[in-house]
Amino acid sequence: MCGIVGAVAQRDVSAILIEGLRRLEYRGYDSAGIALIDRNKLERFRALGKVQALADKISPEQAGSTGIAHTRWATHGAPSEVNAHPHFSRDRIALVHNGIIENYKEIREKLFADGYEFESETDTETVAHLIESYFEGDLYSAVHKAVGQLEGTFGLAVIVLDDPDTLVACRKGSPLVVGLGIQENFVASDVSALLPVTNRFIYLEEGDLVVINQKDYQIYGANGEPKELEVNITEMSADSISKGSYRHYMQKEIHEQANAVAECLEGRISENGVLDSVFGPDSDRIFKQVKQIQIVACGTSYHAGFVAKYWIEEILGLPCQIEVASEFRYRKSVVPQDTLFVTLSQSGETADTLAALRNLPLEDYCGSVSICNVPESSLVRESSLVLMTRAGPEIGVASTKAFTTQLVSMLLLIVSIGKARGLDESVIADIVHELRELPGQISELLKLDQQIEAVAEDFVDKHHALFLGRGVHYPIAMEGALKLKEISYIHAEAYPAGELKHGPLALVDTEMPVVVVTPNDDLLEKLHSNMQEVKARGGKLYVFAHQGAKLAETEDDVVIQMNCETRWTTPILSTIPLQLLSYYVAVQRGTDVDQPRNLAKSVTVE
Ligand code: M6R
Image (cartoon, rainbow, N blue to C red; front, side, top):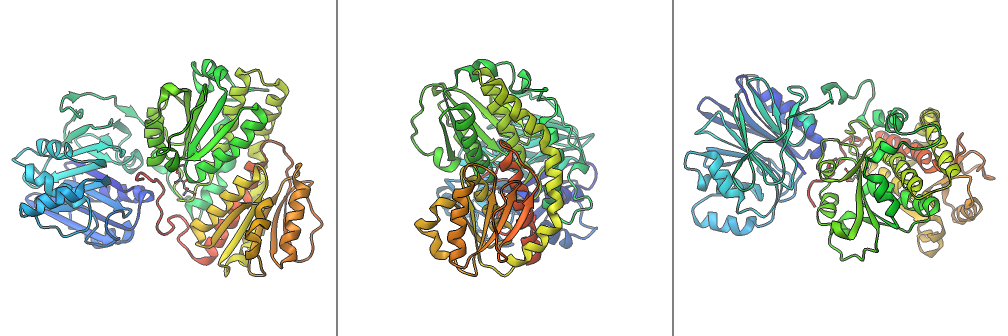
């Protein structure tokens, strides 16, 4: 779960690599480093903390036409300068790594016995020495031999002082792209790192190695045979990844949601339905067969899947299971006949989600669908049926517009399955009508911004918060709690409101803010009773009330009125004020909103 970038050019590549790291910082940001070859010199700079700390260490005189760089999310060894990449071997090999080498201990012991000295606690340094031990003048051969011995996952980029115009990179289980320039070539963990220098990319396949120099590149498959892969022109632009006039990416991404949802729907819905082409030509045959749905995802994407479970069972009348990918991938599960497998992921690179898909006995399922936001991701390239959420680049670690567009995408999936299975056309028309209204309603809700900013002040000195929801709003409460804890570091728990009396009520006192979203639905009265239980214990309620769901509040309650009344899209709308609440609490507590401690945007290790 680190970011790597490498370049071979005629010009100095240090600024290109630093900019690449800034764009990959979402993958990890506890330390960063760069290695440059300038004529006959291999130099390395490393810094604890963010890329800026590294940039501050590099003076304008430091240049090199070949280089590799890395931004780290620590796995083996604490965040420190000595554990930061690039790792060197005998001052001639330099290597950056994204992933985990599982058998590094035994390799390390052998290399140690052979006289290699280790300076870090990382698994990565072992690989640098292993490559050095095989190096006899040809870097490709040395890397090929070394990776043949590695177990685990890796995206690697390696340079050697003896061959200063060559860079060798390879991938297994971690993403890696090759960027093609004019008289210069690059590698990176993803395309965003290289958008300022090229729009031409090759997506390496599992086990591939690539040798690049200024003028050329050659790809080899895991078997060592040369191979060719398609060159793709990306539509992403370097400017799409900027904060604009917003203070944080998260704030910008919250405010982009009306557009993101509109984009997600564009060209996919008709007056009263969903177009046939949305999931591709084979989807109708598969959807007709579906009798059960299994959803697998992580974090916020898991919450989107959880909301969808409620919708699927209510709208389609089909049983639906939802499970976090890290559990599902290691569990023996029973697959009823004609089960459709659905994965959700913003990044499409989440290791557990990808592994769940890769290990799937596909023959046991009637098909698989992935809902994803990154077109170039591994998940998209490895899935048969895909729906892109089209949220646009999401940089803030806390997922916002990815979540709301995942929910919209799940409704599109549900309607498509419903259509294939003869769902009542009026239900389809109702859902589509509500989807059409959604962008405008989201824009309206975003006007609550200042009101919620003021409410957030109440949370600043709190240590804990409870989020309550019932039915489809239970996963929305989970998402609200996740958002608050990940960016404000306030401990937040979500409970189905009816569970309160079975334990968590013991936590409620005057210091415990309790956040509740109240939709105007069948469960409103039940929810009202649960809220009384909180009030009777001195707890303070923060109620986000949908139209028609206004309760007889007292002076102590904080009620924020949401002027929308919907049936199917209610959980999507409920999400918006909860995102704003977390955002403003975090801002007022002075945390690093876009890059909260210990986390990374794309979790490519398990
Ligand atoms: O890229 P994915 O959607 O697969 O990521 C899954 C989770 O890591 C992610 O949603 C995480 O929980 C977010 N930081 C939450 O805001």
